[in-house]
Amino acid sequence: MTPPRVGLLVDTDVTSPDGVDVGAFTRHVVDMGVLAEEAGFDGVFFPDRHMRATTLAPSQVVNAAAVAARTSRVDVGSYCSVLPLYNPMEFAESWAAIDQLSGGRAVVAVGAGYNEDYLRFYGVGKEGYRKRFVEAGQILRRAWSERRPWSYEGEIFTFRDVCLLPGPVREGGPPIWVAGQGPWAVRHAAGTGDGYAGDPFPITPESWRERVETVRDGAARRGAPAPEVVLMRHVYLTDDAGECDAVIEEVCLPQFRFYEAAGLLRGRLPDGVAVDMDIARDTVIVGDAERCAERLAAFTRDYEATYLILKIMRPARLTRAAELEMVTALGEKVLPEVGR
Image (tube, rainbow, N blue to C red; front, side, top):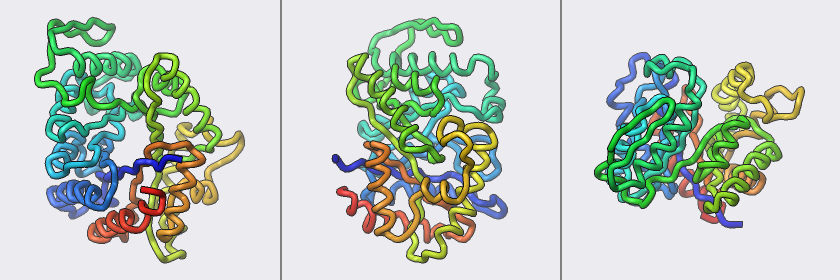
């Protein structure tokens, strides 16, 4: 089996914003992305979060541009962008600029989203947001491909005689990975995506592979290359076996139960199965270097992932210095053990 590429999702949240220097934290976010390249990761990615008291470095574009300017090898991308929030031409222009700045290393993962607070923050109504997502994706493709003025007329967006100048480095623009676990999102990924992007929440290998098969079949029918299969997992490297469950209970289990209560895990676990510690343990990568390497290899095999994106768990006791040390340790002790 071909070894997966491995990226790092840099968390832009803090446990508590009280007394935190926002500028210093933003610099830490960027430094962490730069360090990921030095440690041997293949990509650096940033989430899309808004109007959350704990999100102190919310701008994907600023974070990605800063890392692009200080690196030379890694993919630099969003994971993922809530596309209905944005004017698609502005989005296309921003990521074309990052593609230029990075020398052709930009990647965008896009999703329709679900958070009504984000829609309210951007003044976007919930009605028709899926249509906004579809049309915006079509416009990105046109903007990144056309080198002469073109027009678009949809139900949501209309553009007359526009041309994105300068365009991206890569012909056709950055790869677009489509995120989402529901049937509609999977069908959309099958019909349009360069990759299929998963989230870090519980899902059985069988449920995941059904989605992947649909996306691969769709790509084959439209004559597209095999899509990237992108799986995201939480990770925490520690030699203290007693720390493992404590970190899962503090960081991941509450998140998993929140999304379960919101109905966002339907169709991912067997009927009647509720999230518990056993499921949480099966969903994350936690332990010493040997254990983390084993788990990384297992997710690659069982979920047929071609690209794994790791998000370091951030319990309250984890200092910024310790987090940076963990990035280096993952690169030195874990990534080489999975054939990287």
